Length: 111
Length: 120
Image 1: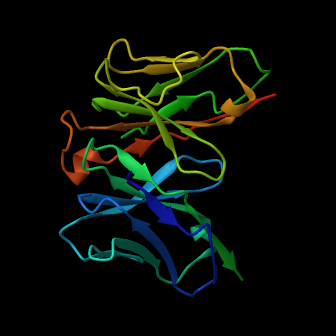
Image 2: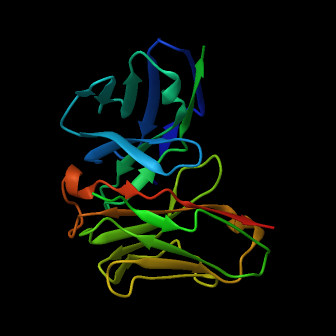
Image 3: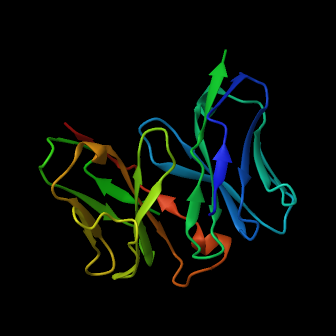
């Protein structure tokens, strides 16, 4: 079946870049999303990329898509303490258009 | 534009009791979703509505969970009776999309703050 995999934790120093990775199995997914979840809060859409794009940049966020390797990444430049959260990768299923979610990557910021 | 509203934010009940959650989607959003998020996992879709009709409830445990969206706007999700394993955050999301397979903007799901349920 369709699956999305993420590492559970990532620890970076404040000011460094964070790169959160996601691999998936459904090569037909057309839209791939990154959501952020802060403690006690709902899911906040950060950005999404269409499958015919390789890269999308939005201020400190850069999304890279490698369709051949079925690999999606989110780079956060100049990571700040406010970036501490769980980051979810989600793909729109090509079969029923619902979202398939990863388990989330907890980003830990070291001072 | 107001976001997705949910209430209550927190609920603590004992097993075998019943509980109800309420969601008010973003105005004009035709599609509404209820998700269950267990600690350490991604959201799991429970039910999807298009206006006041059910699109998909294949993962809803129908022996104890029910949901409705009578007028195509607000929705309620009920659990009766609750079990310990129902402890989770219940998230509501909505999109503008009226047709499956819309573009990235219309299909983008916007989430409410969630209701954290603890079953003792």
